[in-house]
Image (cartoon, rainbow, N blue to C red; front, side, top):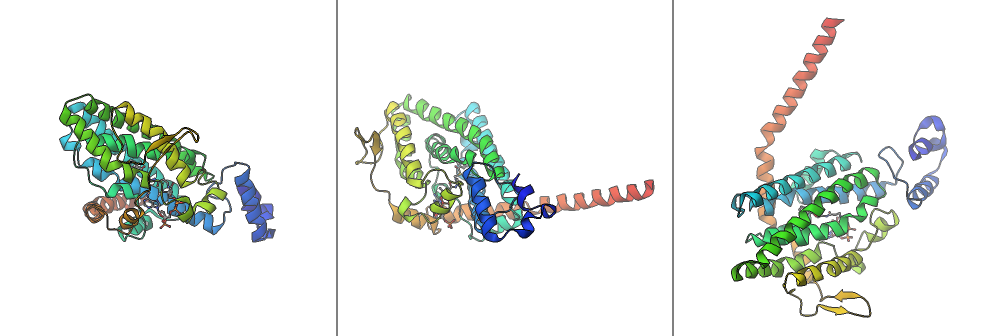
Length: 334
Ligand code: BYC
C-alpha cells in the first residue's frame, strides 16, 4: 500500500515526489481511514507526536503499577490479592506493548526510559496521588480505568497501525479492570458503615484527579488540533471528559455515593451532567513534578531501574554467548 507507493525506491515515486506531494498523499491515507505503517513515509512532526504520546502512555502504565502494587500484600482476601496481582501484571504488559509500538518509530527503549528517568517525558498525572485505603483500589479500577477506557477506545482506530493494534488488547483488559474496581466499590457500599465511608472517601479523593486525566481544556490543549487532523485522537479532551462524567455519575449514584462537586447537576435540555470547574492550578502543579507522590514515584522507578541492571547485563552477555556459539557451530559444520 502506502509503503509501496512512496518508500520503495524501485517504484520511482518516492524519489520523484516532492515533500508537499508526500504530505498530501500521507494526509489522503489518513483521511480515508487506512493505517500508516512503520515503513511508510510520514511527516517528522507526526512521528514525533506519536513517540511523545505512545511513550508517555507506556510510562503511565509502568508508573501506574506503583499505587496499586502498594496494596498487593494487604489485599483483604486471597481472591482480591489474585485479581490485583493479575491487574498489576496486565499494566506491565500494556507498558511493554506500548514501548514496542513506540520502537517501530525508530526510537530505542533505552532512550525512552532515559526520558522518563530524567523527567523529560511525562506520565499521567493520576499516578501521583497516594492509595491510602483498600477502597482506593476499587476507586482506581472504577474511575481511573473507566477514564482510561473512555480515552483509549477511540485510540483503537488511531491512524498509526502498531498503536491502534496494541490498543485493542489493552482496552479489553482495561474493561475487566474497570469491572473489578466497580465490584470492589459495590461490595464496600453494601458492607458496614465504616466500609461505606471508606468507599465515599476514596471517591472524594479520586474524582477530580480522574477528570484531570483527560488533559487540559480544549482551549488550552497544545496538540489536539494536530492529533485530530492526523486521526491519532478522535475526540477532544473536553468531549471525552464529558462522556466519562455522563457514564460515571449514574454508576456512583446507583451505589448510593455522592460526588464531591456541589455544581454537579443533570441538564435535561443538553442531556448531560454539568460539573464544576477543575482546579487547573493543581493539575499544573502535578505536571510540574510537585504533586503528592511525584518524587516518590520517580525515586522508586530509579531504584527499580538500578536493581534490574544485573538482569539486563546478564541477558546481553547470554545473547552474545549464544551468537558466538552459533557462529562457531556454523563454521565447524562448513
Ligand atoms: N497527565 O495538548 P494536550 C492508564 C500533557 S494510563 C500528564 O492536550 P495531548 C492506566 C500532555 O502530554 C493513562 N500530562 O496533549 C494505567 C502535553 O504535554 P507534552 C494514560 C498530561 O497529548 C495503569 C500537555 O499536557 N493514558 O490509563 O493531545 C493503571 C498538553 O496537553 C495530562 C494515555 O496516555 C495528564 N493527565 O492529550 C490504570 C492515553 N494531560 O507532551 C490505568 C494516551 C495532558 O507536550 N494519551 N498532559 O509535554 C492521550 O490520549 C493524550 O496524550 C492525552 C493528552 C489526552 C493524555
